[in-house]
Amino acid sequence: MMKNRNNPDKADKGIILIIVLWVLFFLSVVVLTLGFKNRINIRLRSLNNEELRAFYLAKEGVNRLIVKLAADDAGFDALGDDWSQELVLENDYGVLSVKVTDEDRFLNINLISREVLDSAAGVYEGLQKEDLEAICQKRPFNVPEELKDITMINEDKFDIITSEGKVKLYGLFTTFSDGKLNINTVGEEVLLMLPGMSRRMVEAIKDKRQNTPFENKDTLSEELSLLGLTPQQIGPLIKLAKVNSSVFRIKSKAVSSGRSIEKLIEVVIRREEDGFKILYVGEN
Image (cartoon, rainbow, N blue to C red; front, top):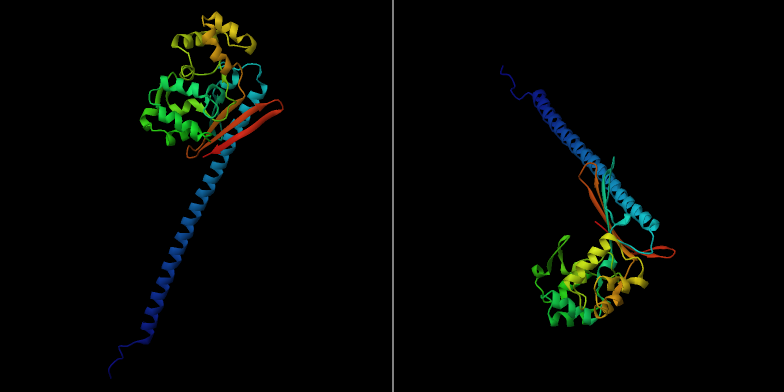
C-alpha cells in the first residue's frame, strides 16, 4: 500500500512556522521603531531643555545690563562707563556674552535735516541727489536697513571701513534716538557727516573725550572752543550734540553648554526718569 505524501500535519506546522516568523518580524520592527522614536523623543526633550536654558541665560544677560544702566549716573555717558564694557559669563548652562550700544551715537534717519543729509552725501559719494530725495520722501523708516531698498546704491557700496571694522552705511543711522548725538560716544564716521566738520576737528574731539569726557551740556560750547573750533564750526555741532544717552541696544547671546544651541535676544530700551521703556524686542 502506498504512503500519502500529502501529510496535513507537516503542512499545518509549516504554515504556523511561517506565521510565527512573520509575527516575530513585525514585532521586531515595532520594537525597533518604538526604540528609535524613544531615542528621538529623548533627544528632542534634551534639545528643548537646552534651548530653554540658553533662552533664560540670554534673558539673564539682558537683565544684568539693565541693572548696570539703572546704576549708572545718567548725567553724562561715555565709552569708559561700566555699561559699555562687554559682559562675558560662563556657567553650567553655557556661555553668555552681552554687548550694549547707545543709539545716541548714531544719526536718526527720520529726524536729521536735509542739510545734514547733504553733508553726509559729500562724505560718502555713493549717496546721490536722487537718493536724498528718496530718503526725504519715504520717511519715516522703521529700521535703517530700509535705506538699501529705496536708494540706488549697490549693496557693496554700502560698506564703510571704520575704526571698529567694516560696517554698512545704514549702520551709522538709527530710528530710535531723539535726534541728538552723544558727543562722548559718537563715532568719527558719524561726526564727519555733520556740516562743517573736518577730520582735524574729529580727532580733537576724540582725544579730548578719551582723557576727560564732556560732562556738561551747558559748558560744551566753551570746551569745544578750547579745542580750537571756531564759533562757525561749533554752532551746527551744538544744535545736534548732548553729553548723555537715553536709548540703548542690548545684544545678549547665549551658547548652551552642549554647544548645539545658540540664542540671541536683542532689546532696545529708553531710559526714563521712572525706569526703562522697551522700544523693540527681537530673538532668534
